[in-house]
Length: 254
Image (cartoon, rainbow, N blue to C red; front, side, top):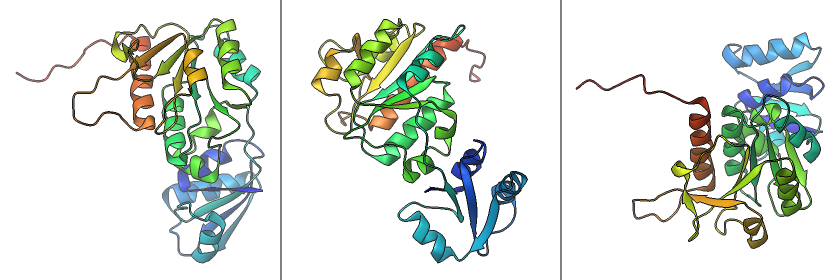
């Protein structure tokens, strides 16, 4: 068994049949809002809801903030790379994938997964080694978005990129290099996988060399780079903006 912590994360986990086995609520938690909704959803599925001392929830959650709600769950089930690619290239889809090269901070991973789900990405690919996986801290940071994403763990990221290309998906690495193009000058309406590197060192050389092209985010201040989750989110929302063909409907009063 694993645990999922936090009100949003537990609520979303309850939306996946068979994932949650038991729900614990902190003693004294007010039975209203999300707490009441979680209890109702759990009981409607025949899942036991138990009230425990907050110290017991602290022990179950470890370092993860639980907001008075913890669920015992089955381990998170990753998708296969084939399932991710099949979903991304299904009829009517213009593929949008997120590829993370050895991202190690659970908060960054959770934040990027939350953004990926928000912009309608068809899946996420992460390496099996030297990278954060879907842990309780990541589920908490993603506010439960992991429950709505196909996430594949692969042994070889460069082979995964080549498999994407074979399906007609372009691979775009987010990194500042001499050949990088400003992200706002790229036509993102094509099928694409956005590759985001790890904190500090960015993409590995082999992953970078397997990208079709590189993009960067222009910087005007004195700080030379952005947090990986922030940078990836900026580009993901530019992709969404272009694909939805937004028109300017509001103008500030003169």
